[in-house]
Amino acid sequence: MKNYPETLKANDIIRIVCPSGHLKREFTEKLIELLEKWDYKVQLGSTVGFGNSYFAGTDEERKNDLQMALDDPNVKAIFMGRGGYGMSRIIDELDFTEFIKQPKWIVGFSDITILLNHIYTHFQIPSIHGPMAKQFHDAFNFSANKALWNVNNIFQNNWKEYTFENNSEFNKNGYTEAVLVGGNLSLITHAIGTDSAIDFKGKILFIEEVGEYLYAIDRMLMQLYRVGVFQEIAGLIIGGFTELKDTVRPFGMDIKNILNAYVKNENYPVCFDFPAGHGMVNFPLIIGGNYSLKVERNSMHLQLIDKSIS
Image (cartoon, rainbow, N blue to C red):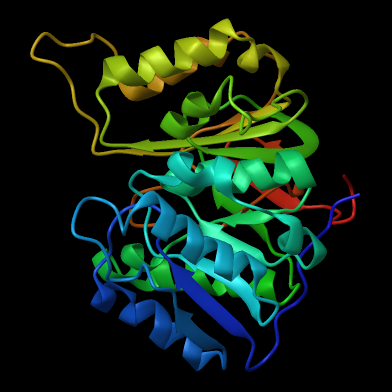
């Protein structure tokens, strides 16, 4: 049985922390403004605006700041300031004892993929793959505001469904019901063989990526293929693959053909171009949520069907 976090209410405390890369304090202002409009109280962890290198502090400093947020009974949700790199350096040192007693919504993506899937795999506590503070600073627009609105719907136990027009020629029609896992492709493959490895069997897998070379993406997909991931999942949702690069001598395939090559002979539904990831739009998904996924000729429908199903 899943252990869902409590519904948030007015005056509940949301804390912003940076367990990975450095983030300037002013980059949190837009997120704080929006959360306070919904009557939440926002606190900043000690790692926000902290650090003199790539990281938002030493491993110990970042671990302690996140640990305090996980343990504090007054904190009802945790937003990550940004991703980058660093979560895998501290994940094994975190103590989830108090968090398990009182789960709280954790919101993040990119490098935070490790944390989101770790807590679901080990404790069956869902979390939110969704926008972080830096994303609102970099690209605030109507879609970003709507994405945060949907995060708040999750906070409020007002579960939403997504229906999008989608006529990608690479989609594979079909229907499935399964738990959703995944996130950033680099971090998914990075976790294989570790204590944070994802159990893919019978799951809907979501993947997205940013800033990688095409050959590197193919290498990561090949790793997933070789360990049997694409053969054992129940469905695949492909989000944004943005700011991609190619080598001087071209790889020879574009990103959609690269992705399609690994799943074209599978029998489960596959949805390309889902609006989530590092692009302008990052609609939230519940890692550990039990979803129905329906892909048709010109549309896709994703719905949380029962939050009590494990």
